[in-house]
Image (cartoon, rainbow, N blue to C red; front, side, top):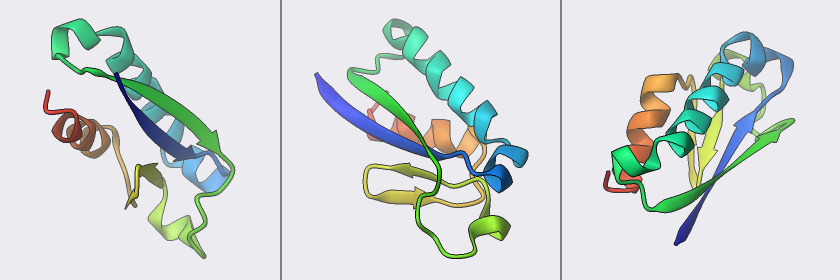
Length: 87
């Protein structure tokens, strides 16, 4: 089983813009893997900062593998995960 590392920035700017909702959505995907045909282990890492300078205007920020998604929302993150996992 493949492992998919997902880093979600939880600095105050990202949390205020919905980072916790994104984490909840990813966790819900883990719960319904058998329905969605996702065949990988998703590891969610809340991190204090992804490393983008002055990313407050780009919040929330999510990193999936080598890809950084700025101004992320539940839909864009879920769509990207589904595309990566061929679900």
